[in-house]
Length: 413
Image (cartoon, rainbow, N blue to C red; front, side):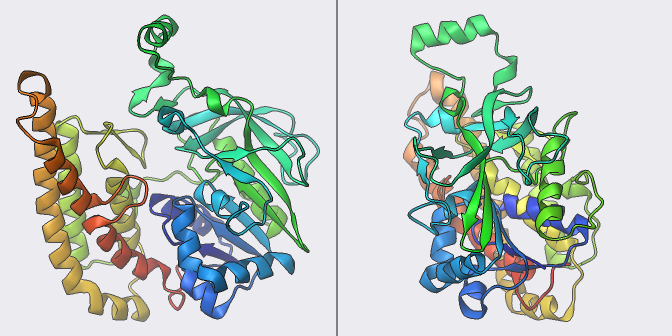
């Protein structure tokens, strides 16, 4: 049995859910309060990306201690990005290392694939990848603060070079000519290459009591989108074989398109919300504010709340793909009217904001200041919250949808 800690995971939770569901391994989707109140059982706890701070808050003191107890007594912990940060010193403390900040904001805003060197001779690294260089997906990663003394931590992968689809903010790094990058650096002092990742650890592992942990700033649960990127999924499946089910025969994660997921729950309110969200995304695309990155992810212009659009699309599509069992129907009966009203407000507000944002871009040179930036910021905050920590009306909608996915009494498989 696998437990998945969901809080503050957003689209990254849905990626991990897709990966785990495809294996057929039994699992439960839990929130921090579930763990604090009822504890953990099974072989493995998996923690998707998102905000490490908010995950810690959701667990609380009791939940944090329960996770430590689970691993100390022989359980396994796998954390990706925000789930990796949760396990570091100053939080869960499974790993003695700390998180290292990035003073240059652009150095954090990287997404796509990175070429990484993999360690040899470690049982959690697949034998056919050991000692090689693999393309591993990173989506706005943090950094490990690696001390001179490894302190019992083994480095399983290190960043080496940008991959062929890497973006820095909304700029496709791989498409930028090297002479222009050098010119920008000389003229403006701007360095696009994410050099603060060079040679740094990407995946690490170690022991805690009788248990063990693996922390990855690469999202190994990412579906493959171009040749070579399937190596991350193969690594994730190897970890699941090693820690959960040695009979697992899968060698690759299945492709994913949230919009292509089957609809098993034909609820009029959910279907209407999905259709209205698709219209908003289409409008944002026409305005040049959102653009397709791959089959499951939208890219966005800097300053546009693309992460929230991605998370809402993933949440609605996944919810519609779940069977409407008795438990979910009971939860939905209590939330349906509130969700319908909140989504109507969100759809109208988001449409207005997208058009106003495009107008602001148009007026930026010809009539700067005509549309006050403060007004756009306030509207965005009310609708989408902060870029890092969420909030706003979209967060309320996500919470209602996630209650349908994450209730511990409603198995998600």
